[in-house]
Length: 293
Length: 289
Image (cartoon, rainbow over all chains, first blue to last red; front, side):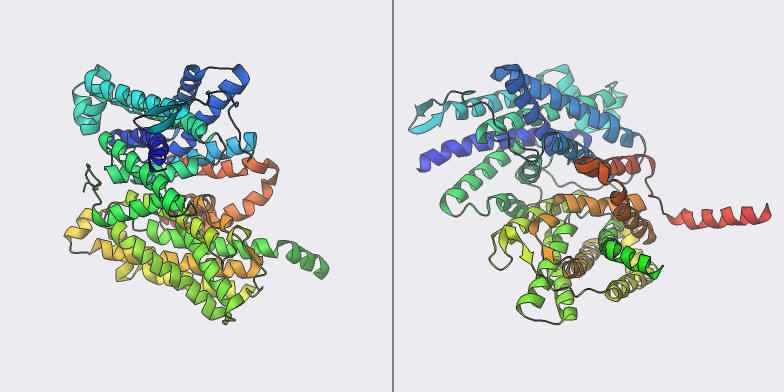
């Protein structure tokens, strides 16, 4: 029973980490909390759903389609709403409010198109076989979710540490002004970061849709709350932190549902968030955001 | 003619009442915005106030005034509890914490016996009258006018302009931010209590994220530099949706579009400090011409 919960918790944590890693990267580089990340996640899930049901896409192409759609959405959000605010000096809350606007536009448009009902992937999209790994029964689906999430995270870390563009992203995260003086195209780096992070959000959307086998237009809200808790837990802007935070939240949710009650599952992320703000607001690895005077 | 007026009133009095309630909610977020903090929990505070007040009148038979005040105090206390750890940090933390908090309130209301769970509370006595709304709004406007030139008001403005500089000047920024947040929660709670007593029915669905965005849109559209901004914004956005009913489910997207456009092109909102001077200048020119 307990070991089974570990399998569930691992799959859930993987998706939380994947969602939060993009969320935290955007904050680390753009210094913006994009509250549209949940809506982008939902877009990814629906893009995957359409790829599967209308075009009979396989798993890899489904994932690719949803990442492209979400990445594009992230690009557009930056182009239309967030980017223009960088050029003018505005109130520090302005970009966040702009992303709330974007989230509302996306969510209500999707609600207009798809309504409030829940959609499902075809029954046999992922065969329901399961494997026994060190005593834990893992379904193929759970293995796929964990595998894809880990793979994407490793690719991202490799990209940031080893490639030219990745290094540019880290330089901009450190200091956009200095990066610009060194000849790094800062605007493009910002836009690239938004696109990559949103693509990761979209991948998390598809994997969540597969994990619970439901996709609906309201799915962006709950994951956004969890993403916020995860990135504060791990430390804002810290990629390792987002991964660790995702694990902590995933395990807390699964274990409390299994052993306490399922009624308050949606409140656990807030409980953790409140606790961490009380005890260690900088999170596990990170630093507190301070406004520069 | 009088018949026309009565039928008009019967059709639109709820809308008219709602204009007042939305005005109060806009003011409740305005006070936190005026010290540079974004609260996305005011819909949840409204919900706590609505349930508290409604349950007190329904189950305990408390007088309306007592219910309303209790409906303001409970959210204010909750705001103090959330605000103290959160407001030590920069502005974005409050937004993030209050976003999750709204979810918690919804979950708690859903799972409580006394609140009727997802079915909501039915049969809240209709006690709110027009003069109650006018009275409360009058008190609020008086409070905010007085606030502007008071020590507290100026401190909030200083924190908004530059929190670091204000702290260096010896202002205990966290302390005042927490009070502003709690006062906002109090106002939202009272507005919720008033609202519950004329809508007859309340359910947890009314106090989630979407109404929180509505409240934010009121203040952002109107402008957060004077108290008239949020009031103008809420009035426009309460009456306007009636005209946009044909948009159906896409109506909510309008809020989003307004938020993005106003932040980009009208960062001071439609009513700001220059509005009155501009108006005066405009009319003077007319006279001269």
